[in-house]
Image 1 (cartoon, rainbow, N blue to C red):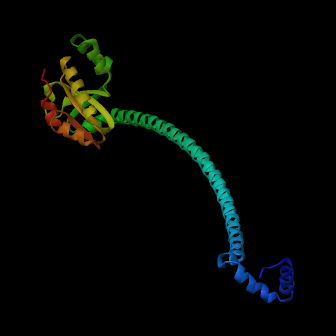
Image 2: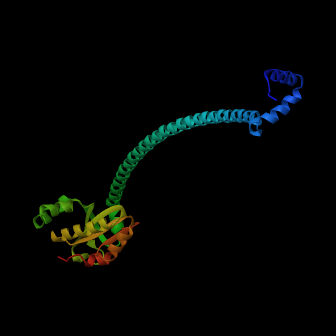
Image 3: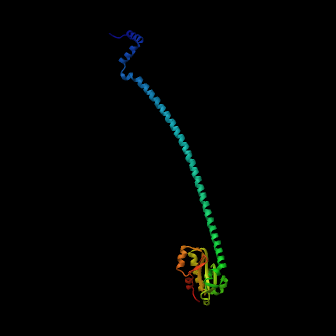
Length: 257
């Protein structure tokens, strides 16, 4: 029997009167997947809401990260500036330290020179007492006192070398006063080093070349190990703390003229 329009309208009225029939009709007319569509849509909407929430949280986290990165970049930039300033300060400090060390070196050199001159003056004043055990009637000379005697035997440079002696003294040997005068070529230094020993030896040799019987002597308050080693194998007398040593060896190296 065909389904007419009138039947359709009757069905609509019946469904309106009986809502529970609508559910049964939907089960009959719609597939299970289609019936599940509202639930799926609702779940999709909920998932979309959760996604939007996560995206908002992610955006906020990204904003916080960017803010922290901005602060970090500012801190790093400030640190770089401070490091540059520190480097500049260190350079200035190093330069100031170098200037201080240079001044200290100059001051040390000046003090050493003053100390050397003081010791030289002290030796001149007390030479007779220092050398009394080996020399009698000792006199401290100037270069002018021996100039006429030695100049004709030496070159200009050799004579100038003699003028650089700290002290020149003369006297007679206490153990052999009839042997004639002996001259003493003295190098004075607070700390005697190899150079002082070498100068005394060289300048005494020049005095001997200038026809004088000369003995090299170094005088001071202390000696470096190098100076001690050289003096131990050289004919040079050593005066430390007012006590003379190695005199016989130094005297044996002097020419008897």
